[in-house]
Picture (spheres, helix red, strand yellow):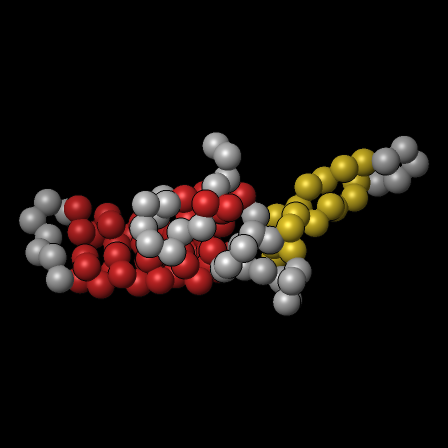
Length: 102
């Protein structure tokens, strides 16, 4: 599996560059730029922890008899990163293995 974060970052760069050249007559450009920035924040929040590590944000919680809640680390890329990348599934470079199975 290649890197969905790098793919997503390149798609966001291209989208932002495209919007930078458009004239904003209806407020759509401002909304699109806010959406790009929000996706960047989500991508930063869900970065890979270390080399080959889990998602830095996601954890499943489980309880075991006699123990308190235990965090179970979620492998990276998490479903959040895969869902963001799926928006660009029709673009060259998208890996079908990233399908988050909605």
